[in-house]
Image (tube, rainbow, N blue to C red; front, side, top):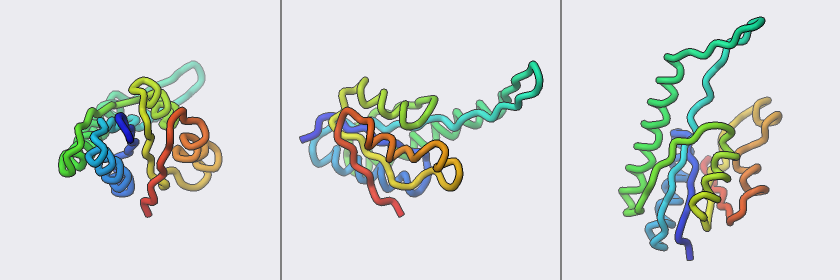
Length: 144
């Protein structure tokens, strides 16, 4: 049924539900699970003729991503899914869609919760954008 499944996580409890769902599907179907996390964006201070990004924030972002991926891989291991982790950057939906193409995914699994408020209104939700633009099937897991 599936040979390659991609799941996105942000390291949150709700995302862990999507990872669990994807890992269970992968284990049941013998698919390879690709767990992806997009590094949190580095805040940038902009002043006239100057852009500054904090090295400390970059290190914290890398550590957060590594820990999020390790946690998701542990969830997948518990149910017996063969897993590869991917630390990505950029827009989360674009990064997930690109990964799906790169690994020839049959299924993309995302949670239904993420961005809230004005940011969601301006940028749209990751699950919605993925559902509309993926070249494979998309499963949106109810995580609330």
